[in-house]
Length: 229
Ligand code: CTP
Ligand code: MG
Image (tube, rainbow, N blue to C red; front, side):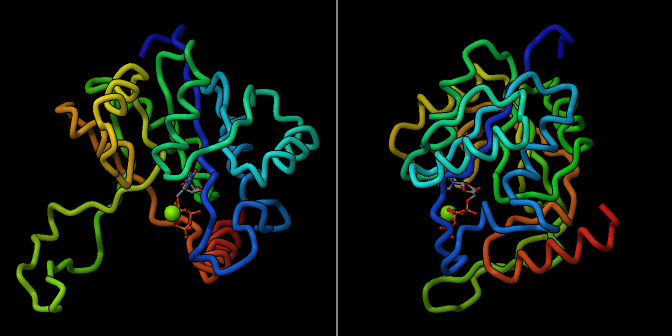
């Protein structure tokens, strides 16, 4: 990547957090700091990031602006509303980064990412223009039908649990989403894969968890304590 090329971050945090079962997971406190603030702070501190677009639900826009002012988030150029599905929120954020050659997409619900993870993602994406953080799966993964009968056990050696950050050349990702039409994907790399482009995986971190259920918040708190961060 050319050092003059701008890198923008899209932080998607416009979900409704249904599996959290009440309470907003993005403004929930983690070591006294809102989850989303911790995420933005990591991107703010990373020197490779030029600017940040924060994608929020309509209900959280005002709260987001307050946090931005209070936190002195100098790189956050846009706080914009998301869409119905995660991919709609990513596309909404991408539209705000026309001047960036590279984009780093990250889930607002993954507060334990590190600057190192962002840096390594940018490096990993250099050759292919697309890279995703991932960790080897530790469970054995089986394929079963609706009848719960096992059809297959997949070779674990080849299986990776994919996370964010995911890093792309902006033209590759916007092209992939243009091609996708109405198909649903669960991560951005899948859109790029479908457009026939190569995606490189790079080593993520087991503690880069996604806050999905209430227990995850307690787990994140414990992981933070353990690492003294
Ligand atoms: N997300 C988004 N816009 C959506 C859906 C999800 O920006 N329409 C974001 C979430 O805010 C989260 C990330 O995508 O940071 C991963 O989604 P997930 O963990 O599924 O969060 P939610 O969709 O909010 O949770 P749930 O599926 O339990 O409702
Ligand atoms: Mg969801």
